[in-house]
Length: 408
Image (cartoon, rainbow, N blue to C red; front, side, top):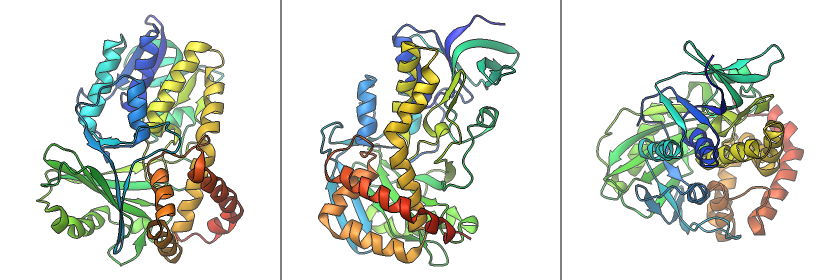
């Protein structure tokens, strides 16, 4: 039995590092277990929303290594709109960034180490549960380490999630995505690009989008993502979908061959549980992924900081308070997003919605805020009002949407 710590974090990505930074800077004894080596790559689109930039600012992480992004170029068929990032409330900065995860994650974990956290790379850990199901610490190899709070920051559900009961809700949508890096003379574009009209090899409209995220280092992150609500999702070939999207952007972006093998990953969008006695799940492990864009770095950073703050304030109530506050902040928006995913799983409904979303300036601006994760329970203005109306409407339509879902 080793000496106890205040917080044991399983997972050294943005969410786990945010917990460690926040808690260690406040004087807490923190250990982080990361199964990968230092500087490991993480499959991701690499995009940072203005919300994520705000969270990094709060953590005092300088963005010198990131490529500054002023807005989003939305494409739907022949329609195209270029929209600057903005926030009606001023809560978030009017810019985002693209920061390849190898460098972003290294910057965050370095900050955690500098704050005094004990970082253990290439070490797998799992929670230790007592007879009542309370997490009392972690086990890594032959070592058992008692902890006041165990934080699951493990990304998509796996062994740790199964042990804690933080698995995905099988009745709800999830996403799949694939990305690669390519060289392009437009690597320093000031806009990220999202094509909302992509089709599979059978010509079926895919609820999802293709992206071009310029990294500013000579390369662009190219990728596509799809929701599980589409017909034929189980047979969807992501490599083929990426190749098809590649053909669309080859000429305008003047891209060369892939610089690496395309890599795919799963996007969890729910968790049956995100807390329990002695533990919390944060970021992707808590299902905190926007169903309408697949983005979750900002939610990971915010949930990680919140978990640390609540533990520092009162270890006894931290898990329950965490679940309550995360629910108040995000649950309605994320639930509405999942219901929307069932809606756009129907190709005809998706096409009609895209005409409105990109065809009018007012709705396009709201779409931008949704795509930028700028909408939550506290959002004022037109975007906030629209989401409240959409939430009520989709709540009424939800039984029918599920009954007649397009997936096969």
